[in-house]
Length: 292
Image 1 (tube, one colour):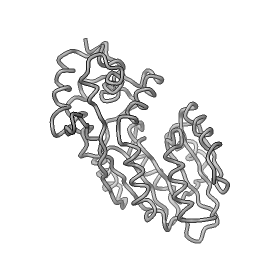
Image 2 (image 1 turned 90 degrees about the horizontal axis):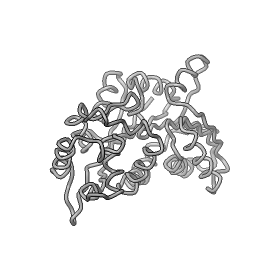
Image 3 (image 1 turned 60 degrees about the horizontal axis):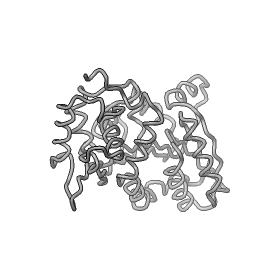
Image 4 (image 1 turned 60 degrees about the vertical axis):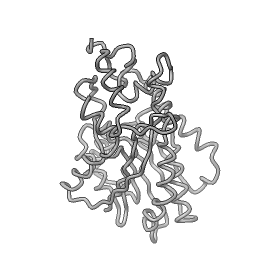
């Protein structure tokens, strides 16, 4: 039976639908906004000191919503300074959305945008071949390390691109999140895909320690409302199941015992909290800031 389960990443449009449902059912973006408002200004305060241009590299910039929020904070901290914003993003669809967002956003006159349709490892290989390494003042890798084959090599490479007093921001799920418990307990029984790794902030901070890279880690609370997963026939629930398990049509294809086990666990305190009749899955995020 399990062999009929297939990875969610094998169906790109289904994945995009699931991801959108995840965003509308979670506090992911609110959590990011809280970080941008409270912590980011202090982190980027010194990155452009004495420079006429600030160079930023966005790895996995997606459709640009979070990137533009970051750029707005950089403009606030460094008014009038030119910004060169390079984006590495493998999805043509996402790049189109990003360009549309830029076109309708005001106050971007001092920012030059360049998009590279490639994965982080393709970008890395292209830079290594060129032998002329471009340095950046701020690099951010938001929710993308799951899709990288060799994470330590990726961290080491992008850290080597930091200019003096530059910083890297890495955002991914926390080692204290429900994702960590879910992946540890059920990862081996779910369809794996070469495109995705079960990695949390605990793994990344261990890698940074081994590489001797200095960092600070901030954990912020976030939840995902999974109540619809307990309602038979709910389309929203179906899409959330797929996102949780990274399985295409999990509800239709999963062995009943596996679904029953996960369903029971989702209601346990180490996975979720129950509040006002809702089941809120622990989607805590870690914001890791590494310095040059």
